[in-house]
Image (cartoon, rainbow, N blue to C red):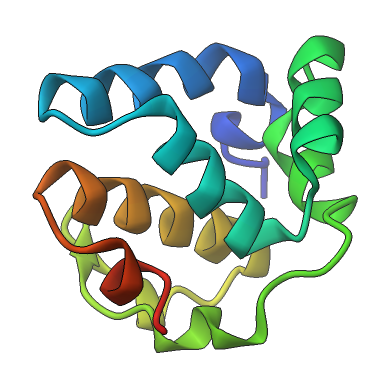
Length: 116
């Protein structure tokens, strides 16, 4: 079975869309970065390096220093699919990030988004 095309898509190409979605709703790039760092364990410098290298999504998550163990608390529907029911690990990580950015854009408090 062929890989989904999102796996080979550059994270750097999608990242501005995350920021735009958040900013349209009065949130900030810093909050988007905080969510991504919380989820993946990248430092700000490492995140910026991944963006600069135009790393694809599959590599971005494969190289993530420390995927947050609390990410399994992320529940809900994104793109019509329950994130907790996605069986393919990389796709689930991508959808976790989508869900967190969605929650940010919907005005949810950062403590709740970061499952504090």
